[in-house]
Length: 260
Length: 346
Image 1 (cartoon, rainbow over the protein chains, first blue to last red):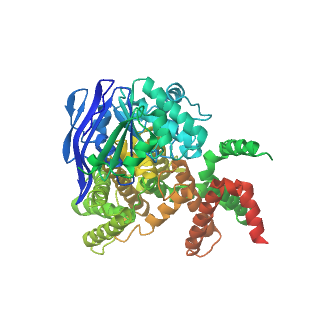
Image 2 (cartoon, each protein chain N blue to C red):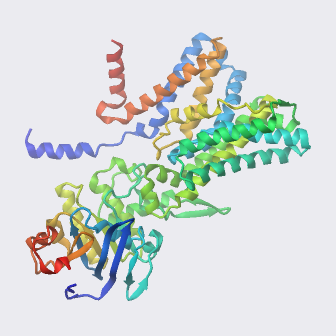
Image 3 (spheres, one colour):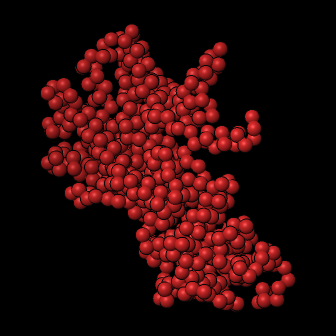
Protein backbone atom coordinates (compact mmCIF):
# COMPACT_ATOMS: atom_id res chain seq x y z
CA UNK A 1 0.00 0.00 0.00
CA UNK A 2 1.04 3.58 -0.50
CA UNK A 3 3.02 5.28 2.22
CA UNK A 4 2.58 9.03 2.17
CA UNK A 5 5.60 10.86 3.56
CA UNK A 6 5.34 11.55 7.25
CA UNK A 7 6.44 14.96 8.42
CA UNK A 8 6.52 13.78 12.02
CA UNK A 9 7.89 10.77 13.86
CA UNK A 10 5.28 7.98 13.95
CA UNK A 11 3.67 7.55 17.33
CA UNK A 12 1.48 4.63 16.47
CA UNK A 13 1.59 2.00 13.78
CA UNK A 14 -0.99 -0.67 13.16
CA UNK A 15 0.12 -3.29 10.66
CA UNK A 16 -1.84 -6.06 8.99
CA UNK A 17 -4.81 -5.77 11.34
CA UNK A 18 -7.55 -8.37 10.77
CA UNK A 19 -10.67 -9.06 12.77
CA UNK A 20 -13.59 -11.29 11.93
CA UNK A 21 -16.85 -12.00 13.70
CA UNK A 22 -17.90 -15.54 12.93
CA UNK A 23 -17.62 -15.77 9.17
CA UNK A 24 -17.75 -12.03 8.58
CA UNK A 25 -14.47 -10.25 7.95
CA UNK A 26 -14.89 -6.87 9.64
CA UNK A 27 -11.41 -5.61 8.87
CA UNK A 28 -8.63 -7.25 6.92
CA UNK A 29 -5.00 -6.36 6.24
CA UNK A 30 -5.34 -2.80 7.52
CA UNK A 31 -2.30 -0.61 8.07
CA UNK A 32 -2.42 2.72 9.87
CA UNK A 33 0.28 5.11 11.00
CA UNK A 34 -0.23 8.10 13.21
CA UNK A 35 2.32 10.80 13.99
CA UNK A 36 2.67 12.80 17.15
CA UNK A 37 0.14 15.64 17.12
CA UNK A 38 -1.23 14.38 13.84
CA UNK A 39 -4.91 14.21 12.96
CA UNK A 40 -5.94 11.26 10.82
CA UNK A 41 -9.49 10.98 9.63
CA UNK A 42 -11.03 7.64 8.76
CA UNK A 43 -13.86 7.78 6.26
CA UNK A 44 -15.93 5.18 4.51
CA UNK A 45 -19.41 3.81 4.14
CA UNK A 46 -21.31 2.07 6.89
CA UNK A 47 -19.82 -1.37 7.46
CA UNK A 48 -16.48 -0.36 5.97
CA UNK A 49 -14.73 -1.42 9.17
CA UNK A 50 -14.00 1.99 10.70
CA UNK A 51 -15.57 1.25 14.06
CA UNK A 52 -14.04 -2.20 14.29
CA UNK A 53 -10.60 -0.75 13.59
CA UNK A 54 -10.80 1.85 16.34
CA UNK A 55 -12.27 -0.71 18.72
CA UNK A 56 -9.18 -2.83 18.10
CA UNK A 57 -7.07 0.18 19.03
CA UNK A 58 -9.07 0.90 22.17
CA UNK A 59 -9.05 -2.69 23.35
CA UNK A 60 -12.73 -3.42 22.87
CA UNK A 61 -11.92 -6.03 20.23
CA UNK A 62 -8.79 -8.13 20.21
CA UNK A 63 -7.51 -8.45 16.63
CA UNK A 64 -7.15 -11.89 15.05
CA UNK A 65 -4.02 -10.78 13.23
CA UNK A 66 -1.75 -7.81 13.13
CA UNK A 67 0.84 -5.88 15.09
CA UNK A 68 0.44 -2.61 16.96
CA UNK A 69 3.42 -0.52 17.99
CA UNK A 70 3.36 2.58 20.13
CA UNK A 71 6.45 4.79 20.30
CA UNK A 72 8.42 2.07 18.56
CA UNK A 73 7.51 -0.69 20.98
CA UNK A 74 5.17 -3.51 20.17
CA UNK A 75 2.16 -3.46 22.44
CA UNK A 76 -0.70 -5.85 22.99
CA UNK A 77 -4.01 -4.15 23.70
CA UNK A 78 -6.29 -6.75 25.17
CA UNK A 79 -8.65 -4.56 27.16
CA UNK A 80 -9.98 -1.07 27.47
CA UNK A 81 -7.85 -0.70 30.58
CA UNK A 82 -4.74 -1.70 28.68
CA UNK A 83 -5.37 0.89 26.00
CA UNK A 84 -6.04 3.57 28.61
CA UNK A 85 -2.81 2.68 30.35
CA UNK A 86 -1.02 3.30 27.05
CA UNK A 87 -2.59 6.77 26.77
CA UNK A 88 -5.29 5.91 24.25
CA UNK A 89 -8.82 7.15 24.92
CA UNK A 90 -11.98 7.24 22.86
CA UNK A 91 -15.06 9.42 22.60
CA UNK A 92 -17.79 7.38 21.00
CA UNK A 93 -20.67 8.45 18.85
CA UNK A 94 -23.21 8.08 21.68
CA UNK A 95 -20.62 9.82 23.90
CA UNK A 96 -20.73 6.93 26.36
CA UNK A 97 -22.05 9.16 29.10
CA UNK A 98 -24.13 7.96 32.01
CA UNK A 99 -26.76 10.64 31.65
CA UNK A 100 -28.13 10.22 35.15
CA UNK A 101 -24.75 11.21 36.59
CA UNK A 102 -23.48 14.79 36.66
CA UNK A 103 -20.52 16.11 34.68
CA UNK A 104 -18.00 15.30 37.42
CA UNK A 105 -19.38 11.79 37.82
CA UNK A 106 -18.89 11.24 34.10
CA UNK A 107 -15.46 12.84 33.82
CA UNK A 108 -14.18 10.58 36.58
CA UNK A 109 -16.22 7.50 35.69
CA UNK A 110 -14.07 4.41 36.19
CA UNK A 111 -11.23 6.31 37.86
CA UNK A 112 -12.87 8.21 40.66
CA UNK A 113 -10.84 10.08 43.24
CA UNK A 114 -11.11 8.17 46.47
CA UNK A 115 -10.17 8.53 50.08
CA UNK A 116 -9.78 5.42 52.19
CA UNK A 117 -11.27 5.38 55.67
CA UNK A 118 -10.74 2.10 57.52
CA UNK A 119 -9.92 0.52 54.19
CA UNK A 120 -13.27 1.49 52.71
CA UNK A 121 -13.08 3.61 49.57
CA UNK A 122 -15.11 6.82 49.72
CA UNK A 123 -15.65 9.11 46.75
CA UNK A 124 -14.24 12.61 46.97
CA UNK A 125 -17.25 14.20 45.32
CA UNK A 126 -16.43 17.82 46.14
CA UNK A 127 -12.87 17.46 44.89
CA UNK A 128 -14.04 15.74 41.70
CA UNK A 129 -16.55 18.52 41.03
CA UNK A 130 -13.78 21.12 41.35
CA UNK A 131 -11.39 19.17 39.16
CA UNK A 132 -14.03 18.48 36.51
CA UNK A 133 -14.90 22.18 36.36
CA UNK A 134 -11.23 23.04 35.99
CA UNK A 135 -10.57 20.52 33.22
CA UNK A 136 -13.73 21.59 31.38
CA UNK A 137 -12.65 25.22 31.55
CA UNK A 138 -8.92 24.95 30.92
CA UNK A 139 -8.62 22.03 28.51
CA UNK A 140 -11.98 21.96 26.79
CA UNK A 141 -12.89 25.64 27.05
CA UNK A 142 -16.38 25.33 28.42
CA UNK A 143 -18.03 26.49 31.62
CA UNK A 144 -21.16 24.89 32.96
CA UNK A 145 -23.53 27.01 35.00
CA UNK A 146 -24.21 24.15 37.36
CA UNK A 147 -21.76 21.26 37.42
CA UNK A 148 -24.08 19.11 39.56
CA UNK A 149 -26.94 18.64 37.09
CA UNK A 150 -27.29 15.24 35.41
CA UNK A 151 -25.81 15.37 31.93
CA UNK A 152 -29.15 14.65 30.27
CA UNK A 153 -30.01 18.25 31.15
CA UNK A 154 -27.05 19.54 29.10
CA UNK A 155 -26.94 20.44 25.40
CA UNK A 156 -25.29 18.18 22.79
CA UNK A 157 -22.13 20.27 22.70
CA UNK A 158 -21.86 20.41 26.47
CA UNK A 159 -22.32 16.67 26.72
CA UNK A 160 -19.59 16.13 24.15
CA UNK A 161 -17.34 18.50 26.09
CA UNK A 162 -17.88 16.34 29.15
CA UNK A 163 -17.02 13.22 27.17
CA UNK A 164 -13.83 14.84 25.84
CA UNK A 165 -12.90 16.14 29.28
CA UNK A 166 -13.18 12.58 30.50
CA UNK A 167 -10.85 11.40 27.74
CA UNK A 168 -8.22 14.07 28.31
CA UNK A 169 -8.36 13.93 32.08
CA UNK A 170 -6.26 10.84 31.59
CA UNK A 171 -3.10 12.91 32.19
CA UNK A 172 -0.86 10.96 29.85
CA UNK A 173 -3.25 11.12 26.91
CA UNK A 174 -1.40 10.46 23.65
CA UNK A 175 -4.13 9.41 21.27
CA UNK A 176 -7.75 10.49 21.28
CA UNK A 177 -10.15 8.55 19.10
CA UNK A 178 -13.31 10.41 18.14
CA UNK A 179 -16.22 8.63 16.53
CA UNK A 180 -18.48 11.04 14.61
CA UNK A 181 -17.74 14.00 16.88
CA UNK A 182 -19.86 16.49 14.94
CA UNK A 183 -22.75 14.28 13.86
CA UNK A 184 -25.24 15.41 16.50
CA UNK A 185 -24.25 19.07 16.81
CA UNK A 186 -25.59 22.36 15.54
CA UNK A 187 -23.39 24.67 13.45
CA UNK A 188 -22.08 26.73 16.34
CA UNK A 189 -21.25 23.74 18.49
CA UNK A 190 -19.63 22.04 15.50
CA UNK A 191 -17.32 25.06 15.09
CA UNK A 192 -16.44 24.84 18.77
CA UNK A 193 -15.69 21.15 18.47
CA UNK A 194 -13.43 21.65 15.45
CA UNK A 195 -11.66 24.42 17.34
CA UNK A 196 -11.27 22.10 20.29
CA UNK A 197 -9.77 19.41 18.08
CA UNK A 198 -7.13 21.83 16.80
CA UNK A 199 -6.49 22.84 20.40
CA UNK A 200 -5.85 19.21 21.36
CA UNK A 201 -3.54 18.83 18.37
CA UNK A 202 -1.60 21.89 19.54
CA UNK A 203 -1.23 20.22 22.93
CA UNK A 204 0.60 17.40 21.11
CA UNK A 205 -2.28 14.95 21.29
CA UNK A 206 -2.82 12.80 18.21
CA UNK A 207 -6.35 12.37 16.96
CA UNK A 208 -8.06 9.65 15.02
CA UNK A 209 -11.39 10.93 13.80
CA UNK A 210 -14.16 8.98 12.17
CA UNK A 211 -16.47 11.24 10.24
CA UNK A 212 -18.93 11.24 7.40
CA UNK A 213 -18.59 14.95 6.88
CA UNK A 214 -15.74 15.71 4.49
CA UNK A 215 -15.93 19.45 5.21
CA UNK A 216 -15.14 18.75 8.82
CA UNK A 217 -12.49 16.21 7.87
CA UNK A 218 -10.68 18.71 5.67
CA UNK A 219 -11.03 21.40 8.34
CA UNK A 220 -8.94 19.48 10.87
CA UNK A 221 -7.26 16.38 9.45
CA UNK A 222 -3.72 16.03 8.14
CA UNK A 223 -4.45 12.79 6.35
CA UNK A 224 -7.55 10.87 5.34
CA UNK A 225 -7.75 7.12 5.30
CA UNK A 226 -10.56 5.73 3.17
CA UNK A 227 -11.92 2.32 4.13
CA UNK A 228 -14.10 0.08 2.03
CA UNK A 229 -15.24 -3.48 2.71
CA UNK A 230 -12.94 -3.85 5.71
CA UNK A 231 -9.81 -2.80 3.81
CA UNK A 232 -7.91 0.41 3.30
CA UNK A 233 -8.91 1.79 -0.08
CA UNK A 234 -6.54 4.75 0.03
CA UNK A 235 -4.68 7.10 2.30
CA UNK A 236 -4.58 10.69 1.12
CA UNK A 237 -2.80 13.81 2.26
CA UNK A 238 -5.34 16.54 2.95
CA UNK A 239 -3.12 19.29 1.57
CA UNK A 240 -2.57 17.66 -1.78
CA UNK A 241 -5.98 16.15 -2.41
CA UNK A 242 -9.55 17.25 -2.70
CA UNK A 243 -12.89 16.13 -1.34
CA UNK A 244 -13.63 14.76 -4.79
CA UNK A 245 -10.59 12.48 -4.58
CA UNK A 246 -11.74 11.14 -1.23
CA UNK A 247 -15.30 10.73 -2.43
CA UNK A 248 -14.12 8.79 -5.44
CA UNK A 249 -12.36 6.32 -3.18
CA UNK A 250 -15.33 5.98 -0.86
CA UNK A 251 -17.74 5.08 -3.63
CA UNK A 252 -15.09 2.91 -5.28
CA UNK A 253 -14.82 4.72 -8.58
CA UNK A 254 -12.54 2.79 -10.88
CA UNK A 255 -9.14 2.62 -9.26
CA UNK A 256 -6.55 0.04 -10.16
CA UNK A 257 -4.98 -0.71 -6.80
CA UNK A 258 -8.21 -0.93 -4.85
CA UNK A 259 -9.32 -4.43 -5.67
CA UNK A 260 -5.91 -5.90 -4.94
CA UNK B 1 -40.82 37.70 15.71
CA UNK B 2 -37.65 37.92 13.66
CA UNK B 3 -36.13 34.59 12.72
CA UNK B 4 -32.72 35.41 14.16
CA UNK B 5 -34.27 36.39 17.45
CA UNK B 6 -36.38 33.26 17.72
CA UNK B 7 -33.33 31.08 17.14
CA UNK B 8 -31.50 32.60 20.08
CA UNK B 9 -34.61 32.35 22.22
CA UNK B 10 -34.81 28.64 21.46
CA UNK B 11 -31.23 28.20 22.58
CA UNK B 12 -31.83 30.09 25.80
CA UNK B 13 -34.93 28.04 26.57
CA UNK B 14 -33.15 24.77 26.18
CA UNK B 15 -30.59 25.75 28.77
CA UNK B 16 -33.38 26.36 31.24
CA UNK B 17 -32.63 26.77 34.89
CA UNK B 18 -33.13 23.56 36.78
CA UNK B 19 -35.68 24.33 39.45
CA UNK B 20 -34.67 23.42 42.98
CA UNK B 21 -37.68 21.18 43.20
CA UNK B 22 -36.18 18.78 40.66
CA UNK B 23 -33.68 17.56 43.23
CA UNK B 24 -36.50 16.39 45.46
CA UNK B 25 -38.78 15.34 42.65
CA UNK B 26 -38.56 11.66 43.57
CA UNK B 27 -39.95 12.08 47.07
CA UNK B 28 -42.42 14.85 46.30
CA UNK B 29 -45.22 12.52 45.25
CA UNK B 30 -45.05 10.19 48.28
CA UNK B 31 -44.54 13.19 50.61
CA UNK B 32 -47.70 14.81 49.29
CA UNK B 33 -49.51 11.53 49.84
CA UNK B 34 -48.17 11.24 53.39
CA UNK B 35 -49.42 14.75 54.11
CA UNK B 36 -52.81 13.96 52.59
CA UNK B 37 -53.02 10.77 54.62
CA UNK B 38 -52.14 12.68 57.81
CA UNK B 39 -54.80 15.25 57.00
CA UNK B 40 -57.43 12.57 56.46
CA UNK B 41 -56.43 10.71 59.62
CA UNK B 42 -56.51 13.92 61.66
CA UNK B 43 -60.26 13.96 61.04
CA UNK B 44 -60.93 10.25 60.75
CA UNK B 45 -58.97 8.92 63.69
CA UNK B 46 -56.55 11.03 65.76
CA UNK B 47 -55.21 7.86 67.43
CA UNK B 48 -53.06 7.68 64.30
CA UNK B 49 -50.77 10.32 65.76
CA UNK B 50 -50.22 8.74 69.15
CA UNK B 51 -46.58 7.94 69.90
CA UNK B 52 -47.54 4.32 70.50
CA UNK B 53 -49.12 4.10 67.05
CA UNK B 54 -46.21 5.83 65.33
CA UNK B 55 -43.90 3.26 66.90
CA UNK B 56 -46.12 0.48 65.57
CA UNK B 57 -45.78 1.99 62.10
CA UNK B 58 -41.99 2.13 62.47
CA UNK B 59 -41.93 -1.43 63.75
CA UNK B 60 -43.88 -2.60 60.73
CA UNK B 61 -41.69 -0.57 58.37
CA UNK B 62 -38.39 -1.80 59.80
CA UNK B 63 -38.12 -5.03 57.81
CA UNK B 64 -38.99 -3.21 54.62
CA UNK B 65 -36.35 -0.58 55.35
CA UNK B 66 -33.69 -3.29 55.49
CA UNK B 67 -34.94 -4.90 52.28
CA UNK B 68 -35.45 -1.58 50.49
CA UNK B 69 -31.81 -0.63 50.98
CA UNK B 70 -30.58 -3.61 48.97
CA UNK B 71 -33.43 -3.35 46.47
CA UNK B 72 -32.66 0.32 45.77
CA UNK B 73 -29.11 -0.60 44.76
CA UNK B 74 -30.22 -3.63 42.73
CA UNK B 75 -32.91 -1.72 40.83
CA UNK B 76 -30.60 1.25 40.26
CA UNK B 77 -28.22 -1.22 38.61
CA UNK B 78 -31.08 -2.15 36.26
CA UNK B 79 -31.71 -5.41 38.08
CA UNK B 80 -34.50 -6.75 40.20
CA UNK B 81 -34.62 -9.39 42.89
CA UNK B 82 -37.87 -11.33 43.14
CA UNK B 83 -36.41 -13.93 45.48
CA UNK B 84 -35.96 -11.92 48.68
CA UNK B 85 -39.11 -13.23 50.39
CA UNK B 86 -37.90 -16.80 49.97
CA UNK B 87 -34.34 -15.92 50.92
CA UNK B 88 -35.66 -14.41 54.15
CA UNK B 89 -37.74 -17.54 54.83
CA UNK B 90 -34.88 -19.93 54.05
CA UNK B 91 -32.38 -18.00 56.18
CA UNK B 92 -34.88 -17.83 59.03
CA UNK B 93 -35.72 -21.53 58.84
CA UNK B 94 -32.03 -22.48 58.85
CA UNK B 95 -31.42 -20.22 61.83
CA UNK B 96 -34.46 -21.51 63.69
CA UNK B 97 -33.48 -25.15 63.17
CA UNK B 98 -29.91 -24.46 64.29
CA UNK B 99 -31.23 -22.90 67.47
CA UNK B 100 -34.02 -25.39 68.22
CA UNK B 101 -32.68 -28.67 66.87
CA UNK B 102 -28.90 -28.29 67.08
CA UNK B 103 -28.65 -25.95 70.04
CA UNK B 104 -26.37 -23.45 68.32
CA UNK B 105 -25.73 -20.18 70.15
CA UNK B 106 -28.37 -17.64 69.14
CA UNK B 107 -25.89 -14.98 68.01
CA UNK B 108 -24.00 -17.49 65.89
CA UNK B 109 -27.28 -18.69 64.40
CA UNK B 110 -28.28 -15.12 63.53
CA UNK B 111 -24.94 -14.57 61.84
CA UNK B 112 -25.37 -17.82 59.92
CA UNK B 113 -28.80 -16.64 58.73
CA UNK B 114 -27.21 -13.55 57.22
CA UNK B 115 -24.52 -15.74 55.63
CA UNK B 116 -27.21 -18.00 54.17
CA UNK B 117 -28.76 -14.86 52.67
CA UNK B 118 -25.38 -13.83 51.26
CA UNK B 119 -24.96 -17.26 49.71
CA UNK B 120 -28.42 -17.04 48.12
CA UNK B 121 -27.48 -13.60 46.76
CA UNK B 122 -24.26 -15.05 45.42
CA UNK B 123 -26.24 -17.72 43.58
CA UNK B 124 -28.58 -15.10 42.14
CA UNK B 125 -25.61 -13.06 40.99
CA UNK B 126 -23.91 -16.11 39.54
CA UNK B 127 -26.98 -17.14 37.53
CA UNK B 128 -27.40 -13.58 36.25
CA UNK B 129 -23.79 -12.69 35.41
CA UNK B 130 -22.24 -16.04 34.52
CA UNK B 131 -25.17 -17.99 33.10
CA UNK B 132 -26.51 -14.76 31.57
CA UNK B 133 -30.08 -15.39 32.64
CA UNK B 134 -32.01 -12.07 32.75
CA UNK B 135 -32.40 -10.73 36.31
CA UNK B 136 -36.16 -11.10 36.37
CA UNK B 137 -36.23 -14.73 35.23
CA UNK B 138 -33.19 -15.70 37.29
CA UNK B 139 -34.55 -14.40 40.58
CA UNK B 140 -38.07 -15.58 39.84
CA UNK B 141 -36.71 -19.10 39.39
CA UNK B 142 -34.38 -18.87 42.35
CA UNK B 143 -37.37 -17.73 44.41
CA UNK B 144 -38.88 -21.15 43.75
CA UNK B 145 -35.60 -22.89 44.55
CA UNK B 146 -35.07 -21.08 47.86
CA UNK B 147 -38.69 -21.50 48.88
CA UNK B 148 -38.49 -25.19 48.01
CA UNK B 149 -35.40 -25.65 50.17
CA UNK B 150 -37.11 -23.88 53.07
CA UNK B 151 -40.16 -26.12 52.71
CA UNK B 152 -38.07 -29.28 52.56
CA UNK B 153 -36.00 -28.26 55.60
CA UNK B 154 -38.89 -27.21 57.80
CA UNK B 155 -41.09 -30.12 56.65
CA UNK B 156 -44.28 -28.29 57.53
CA UNK B 157 -43.26 -27.55 61.12
CA UNK B 158 -43.73 -24.16 62.74
CA UNK B 159 -40.73 -23.37 64.92
CA UNK B 160 -41.49 -21.07 67.81
CA UNK B 161 -40.26 -19.58 71.10
CA UNK B 162 -36.75 -18.35 70.58
CA UNK B 163 -34.04 -17.01 72.92
CA UNK B 164 -34.34 -13.43 74.13
CA UNK B 165 -31.76 -11.68 71.94
CA UNK B 166 -33.62 -12.74 68.81
CA UNK B 167 -37.01 -11.70 70.14
CA UNK B 168 -35.53 -8.43 71.39
CA UNK B 169 -34.29 -7.67 67.87
CA UNK B 170 -37.73 -8.39 66.46
CA UNK B 171 -40.04 -6.73 68.93
CA UNK B 172 -37.92 -5.14 71.66
CA UNK B 173 -38.12 -1.45 72.53
CA UNK B 174 -35.29 0.85 73.49
CA UNK B 175 -36.36 2.87 76.58
CA UNK B 176 -39.63 0.98 76.16
CA UNK B 177 -40.54 3.31 73.31
CA UNK B 178 -38.45 3.01 70.15
CA UNK B 179 -38.52 -0.35 68.39
CA UNK B 180 -35.09 -1.96 68.13
CA UNK B 181 -36.00 -3.19 64.66
CA UNK B 182 -36.71 0.37 63.51
CA UNK B 183 -33.28 1.48 64.70
CA UNK B 184 -31.74 -1.39 62.75
CA UNK B 185 -33.83 -0.52 59.68
CA UNK B 186 -32.95 3.17 59.72
CA UNK B 187 -29.27 2.40 60.36
CA UNK B 188 -29.23 0.08 57.37
CA UNK B 189 -30.83 2.76 55.18
CA UNK B 190 -28.34 5.38 56.37
CA UNK B 191 -25.49 3.01 55.48
CA UNK B 192 -27.23 2.51 52.15
CA UNK B 193 -27.39 6.26 51.66
CA UNK B 194 -23.64 6.53 52.26
CA UNK B 195 -22.91 3.61 49.94
CA UNK B 196 -25.11 5.11 47.24
CA UNK B 197 -23.72 8.64 47.37
CA UNK B 198 -20.19 8.29 48.60
CA UNK B 199 -18.73 4.98 47.48
CA UNK B 200 -17.82 3.45 44.12
CA UNK B 201 -20.35 0.68 44.75
CA UNK B 202 -23.24 3.14 44.60
CA UNK B 203 -21.70 5.20 41.83
CA UNK B 204 -21.17 2.12 39.66
CA UNK B 205 -24.70 0.88 40.29
CA UNK B 206 -25.88 4.17 38.78
CA UNK B 207 -23.40 3.81 35.91
CA UNK B 208 -24.35 0.22 35.16
CA UNK B 209 -28.06 0.97 35.35
CA UNK B 210 -27.80 4.25 33.46
CA UNK B 211 -25.59 3.05 30.61
CA UNK B 212 -24.20 -0.46 30.92
CA UNK B 213 -22.15 -0.17 27.74
CA UNK B 214 -20.51 3.04 28.91
CA UNK B 215 -19.74 1.41 32.23
CA UNK B 216 -18.06 -1.49 30.46
CA UNK B 217 -16.12 0.85 28.17
CA UNK B 218 -14.76 2.85 31.11
CA UNK B 219 -13.42 -0.39 32.50
CA UNK B 220 -15.93 -0.88 35.31
CA UNK B 221 -16.17 -4.53 36.28
CA UNK B 222 -19.91 -4.97 35.74
CA UNK B 223 -19.93 -8.63 36.77
CA UNK B 224 -18.24 -7.88 40.07
CA UNK B 225 -20.58 -5.04 40.90
CA UNK B 226 -23.72 -6.92 39.98
CA UNK B 227 -22.50 -9.79 42.14
CA UNK B 228 -21.96 -7.36 44.97
CA UNK B 229 -25.42 -5.85 44.60
CA UNK B 230 -27.16 -9.21 44.68
CA UNK B 231 -25.03 -10.47 47.56
CA UNK B 232 -25.77 -7.37 49.59
CA UNK B 233 -29.45 -7.82 48.77
CA UNK B 234 -29.27 -11.49 49.84
CA UNK B 235 -27.48 -10.70 53.09
CA UNK B 236 -30.07 -8.06 53.93
CA UNK B 237 -32.87 -10.50 53.09
CA UNK B 238 -31.23 -12.91 55.56
CA UNK B 239 -31.24 -10.14 58.18
CA UNK B 240 -34.90 -9.42 57.38
CA UNK B 241 -35.63 -13.11 57.96
CA UNK B 242 -33.97 -12.88 61.38
CA UNK B 243 -36.01 -9.78 62.26
CA UNK B 244 -39.22 -11.40 61.05
CA UNK B 245 -38.58 -14.49 63.19
CA UNK B 246 -37.88 -12.32 66.19
CA UNK B 247 -41.01 -10.26 65.72
CA UNK B 248 -43.32 -13.27 65.35
CA UNK B 249 -41.26 -15.36 67.78
CA UNK B 250 -42.09 -18.12 65.32
CA UNK B 251 -41.17 -19.07 61.77
CA UNK B 252 -42.40 -21.39 59.08
CA UNK B 253 -41.25 -22.08 55.55
CA UNK B 254 -44.12 -20.19 53.98
CA UNK B 255 -43.24 -16.93 55.78
CA UNK B 256 -42.39 -13.72 53.97
CA UNK B 257 -44.48 -14.34 50.86
CA UNK B 258 -45.52 -10.71 50.51
CA UNK B 259 -42.16 -9.15 51.33
CA UNK B 260 -40.81 -9.03 47.79
CA UNK B 261 -43.51 -7.09 46.01
CA UNK B 262 -44.14 -4.79 48.97
CA UNK B 263 -40.43 -3.87 48.99
CA UNK B 264 -40.29 -3.28 45.26
CA UNK B 265 -43.43 -1.16 45.52
CA UNK B 266 -41.91 0.97 48.29
CA UNK B 267 -38.68 1.46 46.35
CA UNK B 268 -40.51 2.43 43.16
CA UNK B 269 -42.79 4.80 45.06
CA UNK B 270 -39.62 6.41 46.38
CA UNK B 271 -38.58 7.40 42.88
CA UNK B 272 -36.11 4.65 41.98
CA UNK B 273 -36.86 3.82 38.37
CA UNK B 274 -37.14 0.26 37.14
CA UNK B 275 -35.26 1.35 34.01
CA UNK B 276 -32.15 1.74 36.13
CA UNK B 277 -29.61 4.49 36.61
CA UNK B 278 -31.64 6.58 38.98
CA UNK B 279 -32.58 5.89 42.55
CA UNK B 280 -32.74 7.30 46.02
CA UNK B 281 -32.26 5.83 49.47
CA UNK B 282 -34.12 8.75 51.04
CA UNK B 283 -36.93 8.12 48.59
CA UNK B 284 -37.02 4.46 49.57
CA UNK B 285 -37.34 5.43 53.22
CA UNK B 286 -40.27 7.70 52.37
CA UNK B 287 -41.81 4.97 50.20
CA UNK B 288 -41.53 2.38 52.96
CA UNK B 289 -43.03 4.77 55.51
CA UNK B 290 -45.90 5.71 53.21
CA UNK B 291 -46.90 2.10 52.60
CA UNK B 292 -46.68 1.23 56.30
CA UNK B 293 -48.69 4.31 57.24
CA UNK B 294 -51.43 3.38 54.80
CA UNK B 295 -51.59 -0.17 56.12
CA UNK B 296 -51.77 1.18 59.67
CA UNK B 297 -54.48 3.69 58.75
CA UNK B 298 -56.58 0.97 57.14
CA UNK B 299 -56.27 -1.13 60.29
CA UNK B 300 -57.26 1.82 62.49
CA UNK B 301 -60.25 2.52 60.28
CA UNK B 302 -61.20 -1.15 60.58
CA UNK B 303 -61.18 -1.56 56.83
CA UNK B 304 -60.80 -5.07 55.56
CA UNK B 305 -57.19 -6.30 55.45
CA UNK B 306 -57.49 -7.02 51.77
CA UNK B 307 -58.03 -3.35 50.97
CA UNK B 308 -54.31 -2.99 51.63
CA UNK B 309 -53.64 -4.57 48.28
CA UNK B 310 -55.87 -2.09 46.51
CA UNK B 311 -54.33 0.81 48.40
CA UNK B 312 -50.78 -0.29 47.60
CA UNK B 313 -51.59 -0.52 43.89
CA UNK B 314 -53.23 2.89 43.80
CA UNK B 315 -50.31 4.45 45.67
CA UNK B 316 -47.72 3.07 43.27
CA UNK B 317 -49.58 4.33 40.24
CA UNK B 318 -50.20 7.74 41.79
CA UNK B 319 -46.55 8.21 42.75
CA UNK B 320 -45.17 7.14 39.42
CA UNK B 321 -47.69 9.26 37.50
CA UNK B 322 -46.83 12.22 39.69
CA UNK B 323 -43.15 11.65 39.07
CA UNK B 324 -43.63 11.29 35.32
CA UNK B 325 -45.63 14.51 35.21
CA UNK B 326 -43.02 16.43 37.17
CA UNK B 327 -40.26 15.19 34.92
CA UNK B 328 -41.95 16.36 31.77
CA UNK B 329 -41.23 20.07 31.44
CA UNK B 330 -43.28 20.20 28.23
CA UNK B 331 -46.38 19.62 30.31
CA UNK B 332 -45.62 22.44 32.71
CA UNK B 333 -44.42 20.52 35.75
CA UNK B 334 -46.53 20.67 38.90
CA UNK B 335 -48.92 23.37 37.69
CA UNK B 336 -49.43 21.43 34.46
CA UNK B 337 -50.33 18.34 36.45
CA UNK B 338 -52.84 20.26 38.52
CA UNK B 339 -54.33 21.71 35.33
CA UNK B 340 -54.65 18.30 33.74
CA UNK B 341 -56.11 16.70 36.84
CA UNK B 342 -58.59 19.57 37.00
CA UNK B 343 -59.46 19.02 33.34
CA UNK B 344 -59.89 15.31 33.90
CA UNK B 345 -62.20 15.75 36.87
CA UNK B 346 -64.59 17.96 34.95
